[in-house]
Amino acid sequence: QVRLVESGGGLVQAGGSLRLSCAASRLSFSSYAMGWFRQVPGKEREFVAVISWSGDRTSYGPSVKGRFTISKDNAKNTVYLQMNSLKPEDTAVYYCNAEHLGTGWPKLPRDYDYWGQGTQVTVSS
Image 1 (spheres, rainbow, N blue to C red):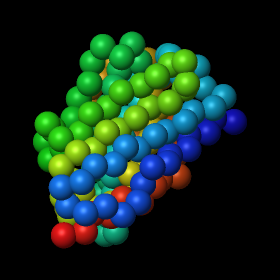
Image 2: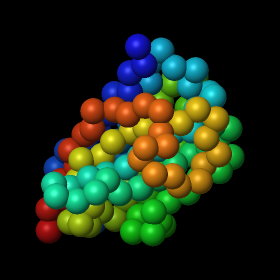
Image 3: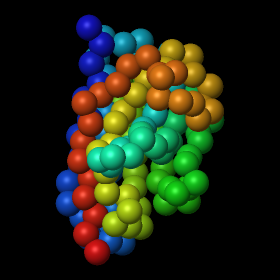
């Protein structure tokens, strides 16, 4: 059974940084695009970032572009989301996902094959 496990969430002040990690198991990791979405209560899941299966393309949501960086380490079966210059509006549960042979273009949540359980990020003002 495929598992995606997020970590690295927590409480940080505005302007600070966090790095989220998502470790994958029982997955041919190098064949999967990996991405991040986020969600706050009462709102739809929002696209944050994605990296293609080959690692040569990344895409970001407009609200995080220039502040967040996604990367993947095939040797560790892990995808990272470096989040800098955090704002209170970045507060959400962050979910990791995987898409087989994804090309790194943003897609709808239903287009992804696997999801993690999420990690809470809270940014205080």
